[in-house]
Image (cartoon, rainbow, N blue to C red; front, top):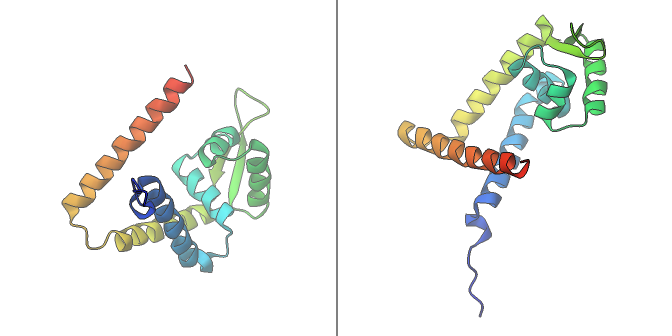
Length: 152
């Protein structure tokens, strides 16, 4: 019988993928009452983290095509969630801003995300949580460095 070098349930990539999928699923369940689609709340959440960004910057952050972000921005603007403001140096670009209504929702999303994080980290002592975050940030830095080296 062939020896399996690693099992899938102990594979870091699969663990990351499963945690991400399960956390998204639970977050979706918790925000269902806000009557926003996943793409809408993701858009608002990312914009809250980058107020005044351009549509291109937001597209990069969301890993979406610029045209998709532009269409979503138009829908959210019509619904009163965001404002587009002219870019001073580029007449074709807009700076995106949350409206007060969206800022309140972004605060609720942040609170829901914080409670979810507390729930899925329950049972891990504070020192282990800190070490886990530091280790994951180290992995992220390594991956970002690999990406930067690939573009040289």
